[in-house]
Length: 427
Image 1: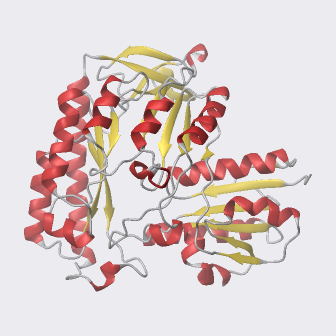
Image 2: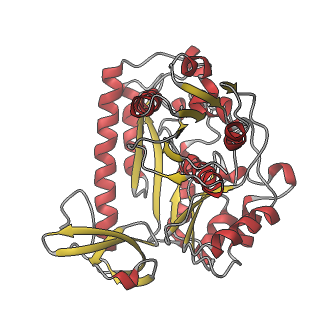
Image 3: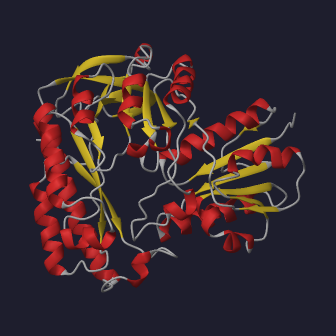
């Protein structure tokens, strides 16, 4: 047992949050007390991201913050930035452990053995199921890791390795543990979730069907799935299932076929449009979100106008907009004409504006309807009194007067301009 305080800081995707929670459970089982990252701690764990240059800058800031708060602390930098940039991290005085994605789940073993300063960043090959700690409402459940696609802009395959997952039976066994924790909603996460089971002769649809049979988990969301992997069978299953919600996150990345080809994406705009149309035909109220990148190589004004026109044509609810930044070792470094950063930012701003219009239109289309809401514990003070918030099945945040008895409950609730929580005025 180690009677120490431990603080964590997680950057990046839901996958990282699930993995950090697994580490925290290990440390708590060994007698550690968890404290806020902004407090003085004996052990700091920074689980890092390398998806953009901004993400990497945030990683460095968090590392230095931990060291400044307690120069005598054991500081561990783990995850994707550690995997791809170990030498850079090692130059920061005060970091003891640098563990990539193959070894980060063994951090406690390193500390218990009093191992000397360590850099361990071999290619990730193992797979460990992980889930975030339940807050009585939502749990992020890692069901897949790695990616075989090697899109030209993406450093994640270098950080997380090739596609891998556990079997359906092994995954369902952990889902039952989550169910016993009392969580009402499970978000399935992965790097490329739709490739689940490939090496085991199983499919992602096999997993969805098995999970849907766990009665005490009332809701599932699929965090992200590639458009070429969301089959008609998956769409139809979600539409008719007991617990899977009408909420999809389907990466787009560009609305230009020329740019998609340069990105080495596995679809074109026609396939993408048809997938979204299919979803809306069987789930008219479904929320559909998309990642999109602004300013990738070759996205001149002609191609960008195609992007905007295509996005405007989509039955989409909102966008996650990212400004392209070069990633080391990626094929994009040698591809096409570079777009000046000021133009990238202009394109990003234009896409944000389209996203805002799409989200407002989606919210307004739902006014007057009643949807089920999972109410959260957070209390929000407003001029109208204390309020609590929650998410509808189709991912609209609503509010109602605070009622402690409703924390973690799923109830029907009317969508009105007053009950919607949004950063824009509802009509």
